[in-house]
Image (tube, rainbow, N blue to C red; front, side, top):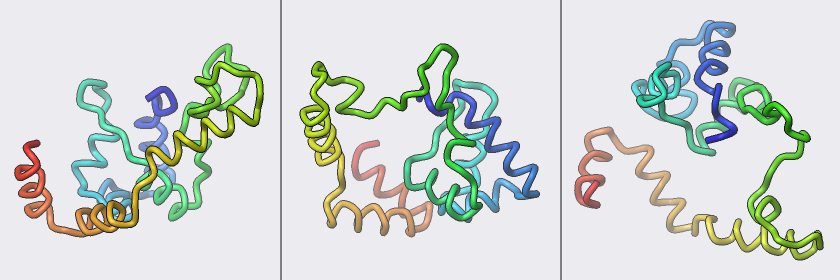
Length: 138
C-alpha cells in the first residue's frame, strides 16, 4: 500500500474542505459508511484502503486529482511511477517490458461475468453481501 500511506489524512482533508460527511463519501463510492471510516482510521492496524473502483469514483465524482490522494513521490524517489511489468521487468527493452505489463493487466482484468457479479454484489444489501461471504467461507 505504498501509494496509500497518507490516504487516510488526505481523504479526511478532502472531506473537511468540501464539507462532506463519511456518509457522503460512502454514497459517492457506493460503499457503507463504516468502510469510509476504516479508510480514515488513524490506527494503521484498523485502517482499510479503497479499491481502484472506489478510488476512481471518489476522484471523478469530487473532481479531485488522483495525485492529490496518493503518495506518488516518496523521499528519494526519482518521480517514476512503478507499474507492474515495468517495475519488475529484468529487461531494458521497453517493448518486452510493455508486453509483460499487458500480460499482468490481462491476468488481473475481470471477465464480463466477474464484473457483473461484482456490480451486483456491490448493489446488494449489506445483509446479502454478508450471506454471500459466509457461503464463500469468509
